[in-house]
Length: 245
Image (cartoon, rainbow, N blue to C red; front, side, top):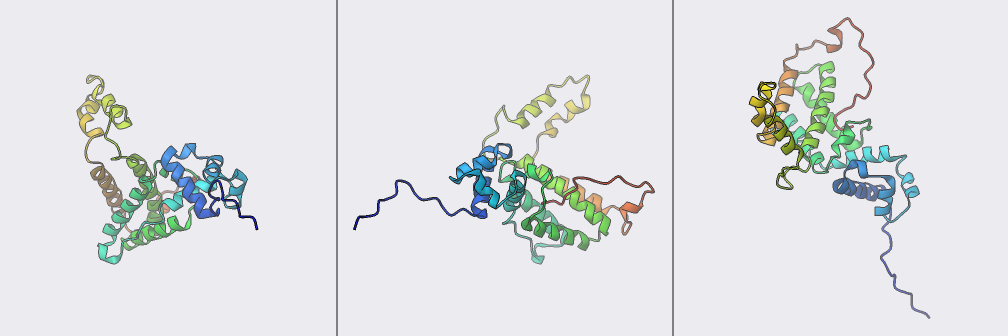
């Protein structure tokens, strides 16, 4: 009986949605979101692009799933972590950290990405904590949108920070140089603020921004529906999204 030939290379691993998401987020980490295509993901999985359509309709759906996958391991703070505000700040910080750890994945959240189960879990907890803090339904709903913008923009700002020493070529260094070399006669305020505009502790700046947001929410008149404070009928809002959608 002839012996079976040994394989010249390992067989392909079984393809599944988890494998597709893992390969996609690895490409995001390496190349950034804009460089990720269905073809590149398929190549990483040693298959053809057509195989991916079993799991996703298109690239947009794939990237939305990857965004959701990036926050899968975020743990919701329990009651022992402090009052509602402390838990909210802690939760937001954890989400920012999770997203910032995957290059520019947060940029997907600033586009039209439908929410996934992990993002919905975290958004539900944020909404619950805001209600616990006394915000009415209108303020709570709009706060979710505001916190989402904070989360994504902060994650993008923090992405990759600390992995390499700063160099004169980094955006922050170039922005700092721009402010410091402005003509003082024309831009006296910006020149005076130059050391602070791009300096300071990154985490301290982020914490300050979040405190200002929450303080502003709490300063709103209690139990006054925001949508009824004006007699002008607002235009339909397009592109509104929750923090992890």
